[in-house]
Image 1: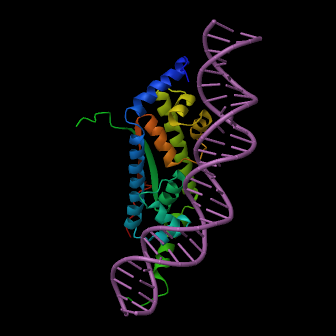
Image 2: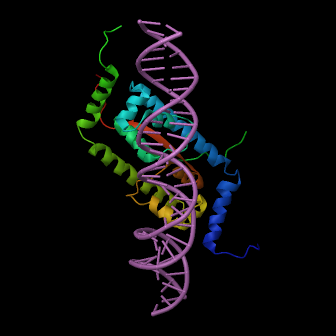
Image 3: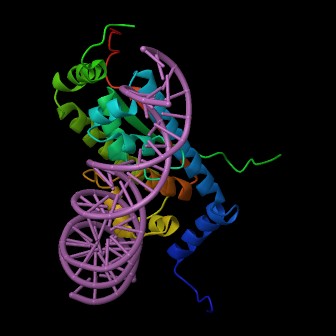
Length: 110
Length: 110
DNA sequence: TCACATGTTCGCATTATTGCTAATGCCGGT
DNA sequence: ACCGGCATTAGCAATAATGCGAACATGTGA
């Protein structure tokens, strides 16, 4: 597996890859994803409770069943889709806003 | 204890349903969803361009192919998942932030 | 014109989420 | 204890997104 010379474009990709991934492997991404999932689950639950609804009631508004809502409110759930989030938001007279914000620089100093 | 009625819970659901859906049918939700999809597609493309990457390069960083990135950057794509957004964000040293905001003017609390 | 890079679309296998029902646990009211 | 409502979990069928390769369209430069 000798690493033959590659094109410049590919090289740039490698550099980026090293910069963002190899430093702290995918743990950073995985951690961030877990946090995001937990956050979304919590937001859904909070929104529902604030509206004074049970899971069954929200499910009916959204057009699904309580078990589905329960799944979505579980912090370990990794299958959040924008479509479902929009359905829930619409049922509660909200809208989903998505933003990409810069992850903290590697100021992981103590 | 209030007098036993038929089904107060179901009634509340109906009221909410009427309040949020029947007034302006699901067009509002559909429109909002279309807008959200377009927004996400644009954000991904903008983020990628800002990073100076081609679709192929981003695909490699994310761990997929260019055709997938192309799909995600298409405004008509409806299949956005939080998992994929997080992967893209992580590859570009960003993180995804999701917020539920009220769709319209505050509903005068009844 | 040719070659190359980029973006786009198509088709299909794989994988995952959704949708649904039923069963279970848990708590509060009667 | 019983019952009712609520939340959670398990299982499975149906639907949808992903993954992947290949081909096509466009533009740019040699």
